[in-house]
Length: 248
Image (cartoon, rainbow, N blue to C red; front, side, top):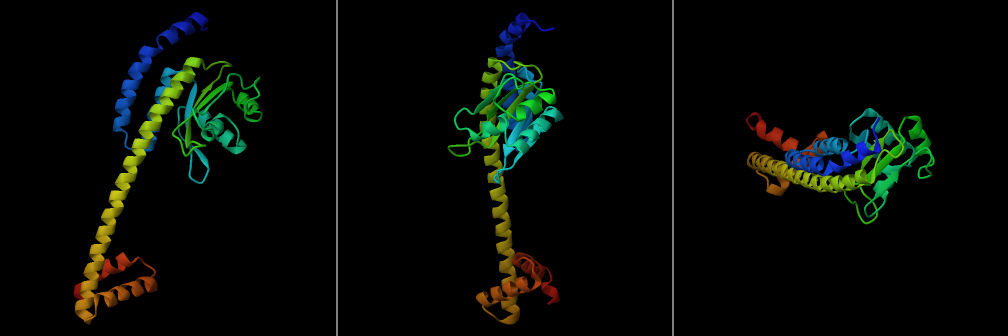
C-alpha cells in the first residue's frame, strides 16, 4: 500500500521525470504531422508523469459535437461519452470556460460539482477527475480538453493539476502549429489543383476554338453547357476533350 511518505518521495522526483518527458515530448511533437499524432503523445506523457489511471482528450467540432480522438484506456472514452450525452462533466465544463479552464472534483461520490455525471462515474469505478481546457476558440470557449481520471478519491493532487495545465498549454501550441501546417499544405494542394484545372480548361478551349472557329468566350460556354448537361465538373469535361482530341 502506498504511504504518504511514498507519495511525497514520488512527488519530489517529478521535476526530473517531467523534464525528461518534456524533452521527449518536444522532440515527438516536432515530428508529428497529424493532430492525432500530437494528441496521442500528449496523453501518453500525461499518463506517465501524473497519478492518473486514465487519460483522454476531448475535441469539440465546429458543429458543437464532442468526440474523443485519443485515450489511454477504453474506459476513459466511455467516461467522456457519458459526459457528452449528459451535457455535463469536467471535460464539457473545461471547453466552455474561458481563462485557465480547469474543472476538478476530488471525490465524485461525495462532491456536488457534477450532479448526474458524478454518481455515474463512481459506478464505473472512477472517483476523482481533472480536465484542463486546450487551445482557445474565441473569448468564451475552448475547442478541447485534456482529461485525467483516478480510481481513488483524492487520487489527483495539486501537482497533477499544475503539470496538466503546463502540458495542456504545450499541447495547444503544438496543435495550433500542426493545424496551421495542415491548412497550409491543403491550401497548396488546392492551389495546384486549381492551376491544373485552369491549364486543362485552357487546352480544351483552344481545341474548340481551332476546330469550330469560335471565340474563347464561346468555347468556354460550350464547355460549361456540356458540364451542366452531363452533370460532371467542367474541369473533367475539359480533360476528357483534351485527352481525346485526336478522335474529334
